[in-house]
Image 1 (cartoon, rainbow, N blue to C red):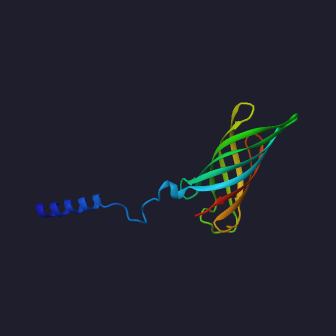
Image 2: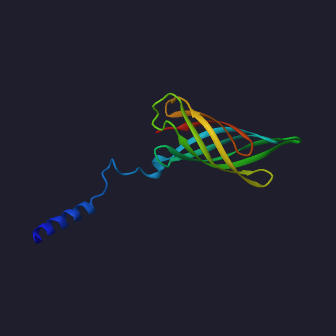
Length: 158
């Protein structure tokens, strides 16, 4: 009986000391980050055109969190001024494994605008990513958040 407890204890110690296999280990965060460039028009009382950069990270198989920093002109009745924004939008992908030519998605998040002071807004988007072009995939989206948003993104893939 004591011998079986010793063998069992030794087996548990070996299992507890063993780390995950290479295929089971999650890649480091830097390997999962996906950069993108984008252009967005936000049509409201004052229309703005923003160019920006984004970084996306998977939060699971179907969800990607994308943060964006963008800026550009805002057209007012008396001329143009500089406008900037930062977004954090979680996108739910309907085809996360690239099985189809086009991949629709829906997203929601928040945006912080910097023109006439600082304003926060909720954002909702619907979009579709097109066919892969080398290591990039284009995407087109429309949404609401501070006005009607129309955007184009070029996201880097693995």
